[in-house]
Length: 495
Image 1 (cartoon, rainbow, N blue to C red):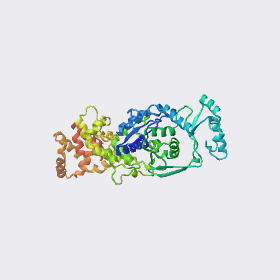
Image 2: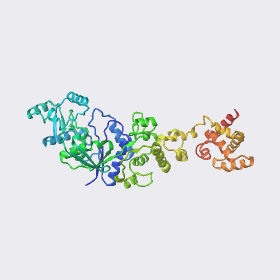
Image 3: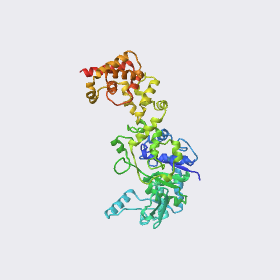
Image 4: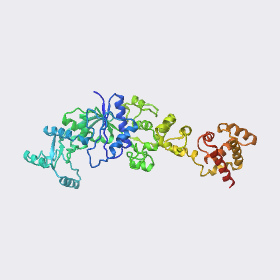
């Protein structure tokens, strides 16, 4: 049997990081086994559908480089790939269940059912539409054939699954083992809603079967639905695919799964791309390959200490047996560190070509060669590409303040004398690459510690003692800029 997996998001909003991880694991499994990765848009809930969400999902997968072989934009033999376009298919399939007595029409009004729920709540009970009471409710099992036909003509009905009482539903999950649920715990779920659209559960099972899905890899939140889905498969007498329910992605701290609110409060993205003025991983400066590498370790362990993986390597190593049951805690600092490693090991020229928007800060008049030199100097300091703006500011903006602790530390060492000597070197047009010997010789002659010389220079150029090699920085700055900053610090010290 060929491996066919699907990623089936609902277009009710932006694609969350949990959905990204699910898409990635489906993709890895398909590629590992030379199978097919399918995208299906589950848009049966038309009231909650967000118009821009479907394009957002497609663009997110494209940015990450895990695009499907089949889907709304890549037609295959099992389409349509949007549930809203498959209504006739669901109607035809549910008729089969009605004919075999596995489903039935229900005509109860919403008001009547709401009243029943209230009555049960008063008794401390939960109302269930099931084998225990369905013969006393308004449906095709309790009405005559004539009454049923008349009510069907009026069109105000739903179609429910007929769940037999007193049986045990058993189904296996490849991560969590055998799961057993008593059928009395499950009510007669609606398969087709009053508007003629299928419920998620019915459409999900029908589509997975008709699209020949071999493995259903989805989030843990769908685990409670697994017995119901087994009942629908059994009602059709269809083979059941292999199920794998992935662990939740948890908050960085505390209990519960990761949410957008956590990202807003703690200052990190939870979406791949920008959504409703909320920056995504892309806009913050994550490389897509770095994000995939980090996501792979949220719930999966390769069995080694290695933490940096290219996509091809992930495909080779991926094994579902190494997916953990427990939740995986999201760690933004770790994600930044992974991105940092990818940036440090990536070709600088390619980074500038792939992500030009992050380097516009250098200005339109800066040559590509100089831009590349600046990035090459700073890239070991970058965790996100957005960091380039602040790190590169020393090349395009004079210091607006000076570290007073440094000034107190060196003010008795005659820093102005050091700065004036550097001005002399500049006026002789000696390149910064030759300054070190000049400064060391002068320091020995004047009995100035070399550390004080370099601290004075760095303070003038940067305003503090942090940053890359100051002599390399000076080599990338224009002579007039260096002179201006040296004189500015001298004036500051005079005052």
